[in-house]
Amino acid sequence: MNMTLKLPGLVAAIAALCFVSLSAKPVQIGFPAPDFSLSDIDGNPVRLSDFKGRIVVLEWTNPECPIVRKHYDKSGNIPGLQRKATADGIVWLSINSGPKGGQGDLEPGEVREWLKKNQAAPTAYLRDVNREVGKLYDARVTPHMYVIDSQGILVYNGAIDSISSGNVNDIAKAENYVASALDAVKEGRPPTKATSRPYGCSIKY
Image (tube, rainbow, N blue to C red; front, side, top):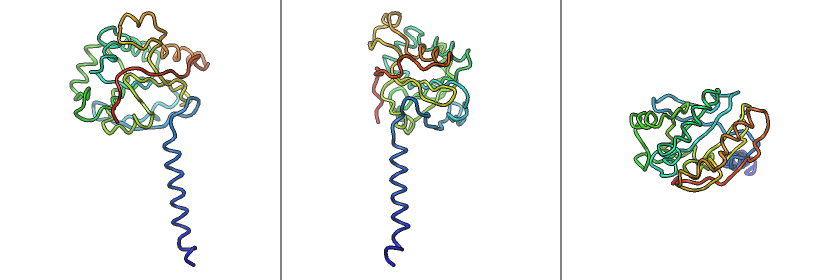
């Protein structure tokens, strides 16, 4: 009798543990990118699933990070890639997982000014002040880049390019992994390099 009474609770506990285990599984190349919802700088909700059927780039960013600055105001590297990608119909989501009030957590007006100054063109700039999406994707640094194909499958996870340095002159000598991944996906083939070690400013969790 006691076992019968306890069984539903035991089943529920096991189910809860299984759910936590599955939801905590890190993102993997070749598997569906987990859905999420964040607000843009106008307060509008943006879900990854809103862009079903389209190629998506996720870029973790911090406007005050020296490595982000290398690829933004010092070179225009990432803004240029954003403009080319969005002109091709690719969705580009810039995500800031800094805590509220922390380094690089700009208010909406400041974000607009920063984007305009750098001629940046992401589809949306999203604030992840609770850092839940950053943890979900195991984003480690800024910039940390992900490419998702039109089927919703994660096909690239890693650095923006092949030279891990703060020297702006290295950009021209480096292979841009994100550009290469996007070219591959548009041609219907997997990227030659699906993962790399991201470099930049650490995201604090």
